[in-house]
Length: 264
Image (cartoon, rainbow, N blue to C red; front, side, top):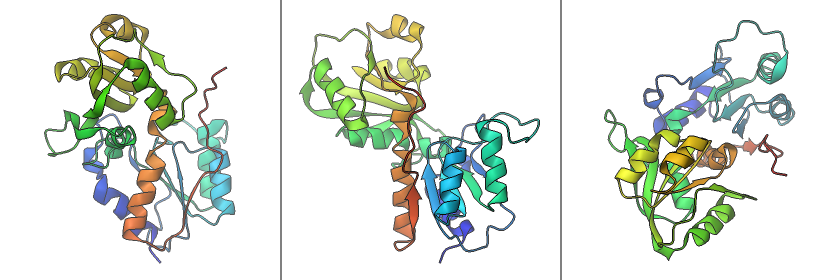
């Protein structure tokens, strides 16, 4: 059976800590004193919540791997109040380590979040949108070509089906067919100019500001799919990495993880 250190090593072989952005907090954020102990199970999630820690304990998992860092801004106290503090206290009491893999998996070579999004849409000739100069093949965002030209409505329909969306926020649909699409998981408004510069006719991301729609909506078709929806594929990426290294190792998804935002 692998140790906690072994599981983390498998993740970092694809998404090394050196890839994370300077403002990020990727890594082993809770626990870590006994990573040489046997890993009894891994719970995979996008965000760590008390419900996820509880289910991890019930399932016998002593490691949680999440996409979003449970500790992002500095904590001034750990009183058990609020989602973050309660989750940390529960994890420590249950002897569960928490490893968060954020921008390092966003930027991973051919296994990053945006690359997976492009695959989910069936794009071809996928490339990095904003390359990392220090690591060839790594970077944020992706860009690729559609198999056949499609209308803006057809693209949106495909996006909604691929990512399980009830709705999508969009700029004014262009009349021309779309053949080249850029994407970025999570908040990617800063890369809209880059998407335009490399010839994308549509840009799929989340957390798009009103002024981004206003400033760029006539030059590129912007499709905002929601932050959670764009990054829920991270659980599948983590699962595949672990299974490739440890084919017979048990890992779990949190069964009831949902977008905290409702569409009414």
